[in-house]
Length: 226
Image (cartoon, rainbow, N blue to C red; front, side, top):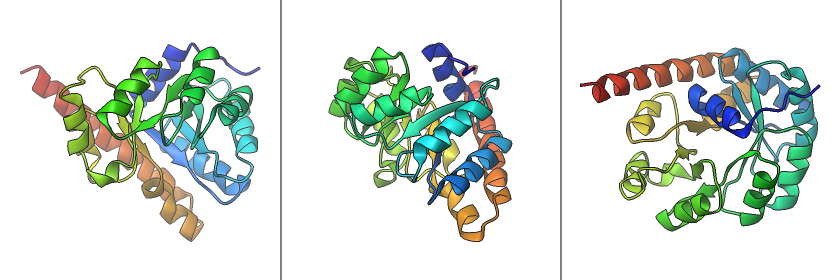
C-alpha cells in the first residue's frame, strides 16, 4: 500500500533534508539507478523530471519501492495541470515546475500535494504564494547566484525559496546563508555518473551535499544564537 503523507509532513521531509535531487536520465533504468544512488547518499527528496522517457514508470516504481520509508518522491519539470494530475495519481507527494503555472498549483492543492512552482522575480514569487505555493523554486538561479535569494527575501522574508540551477557542492553553503530553505540539484549530482556509468559517483556527491548542508546549518544556528 502506498503511504500517503500529510502535505506538511512531506514539506518537512524536504526542508529537513535540505536538498531535492532532480533526476534527469535518458531512460527508465538509468533514472532508477540515479535515484537509488542519491538515496544511498542520504538524499530523501527525489524529483523525477517529466523529461525522462517513461518518467511515470520510474515514479511508480520508486513510490512502491520506498512506500514504508522516509523517502518522498516528486515530479519535476511539470508544465501544466494535466501533467501534474498524471504524476499525482502515479503517487508523487510533491510537484515542481520550472515556471509559474496556476493550473499546476490548483491541481496540487486540490489533491493536497506539496507544490513548488518556478519563479524568478518578486512579482512571480508573490503570485505563487498568493495561489498556494508551499515553496518557490528560483530558476534558473545561476543567472544571479546566491544574491538573488537575499534580494528577494529582503521584501519577502516569509518566502520559502529553493534555488535550482548553478547549485554545487562548493557553493551550496552560500545559498543557505543567503536565505534558501533548501536547494535543488540536478546536473552536478548526476552528470558525471551518467557519463561514466558509475552510479557510486552520485552517491558520493550526495553525501558531500548532505555534509555541506549540515555544516552550513550548524554555522547559521550558531550565528543566530549569538
